[in-house]
Image (cartoon, rainbow, N blue to C red; front, side):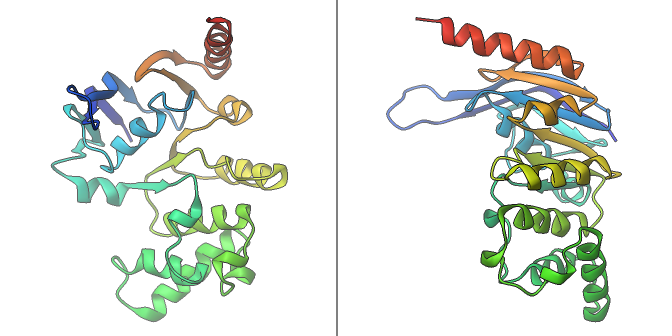
Length: 237
């Protein structure tokens, strides 16, 4: 699976400003590795880059494609291939219970209710969540909610999994659970994170600064580059 950016730019109008604000500047990338990380400071453009991949954000100029499907012209095909997991699972879990959420994600592709229920239970069992399937999502821990959101996304078997800072709300135990879960997945993963240990698990890491890719390479070198950028920022007057 290839994720292609061709001079992708995102600019948005800002109140009381005469010119649009550019969030992402002419990014050109070909992402084919199995595990790709994206690191950078808050507001650097990480989430914007990720949201381009499944059409949540459209480029103002340039183009983005997943396996040849343009994210604007063929957004339905793209979203069949790309699953997106948000930072806060409560923004994604819309039903009262996890079981209902997973079944909802299957509704478009599986018409038969009994088959939907069977597949939903299989998805929940995969993540050790079947015993929590009928609890209110508000009774679950942050880690359980995040895994429930992940189960709902993976139930439809996307080829690409995009995760926007998935460990932000997790304690150490649940972070390690998420880390092990991601390591065992078949999907191509594109993940933004502030967790540099998670970034080191990747095959390739992008460093984003002020809407530009300022480093693209191996995880250790990328983390070193990001640490240097942070140190330079602290040293600035």
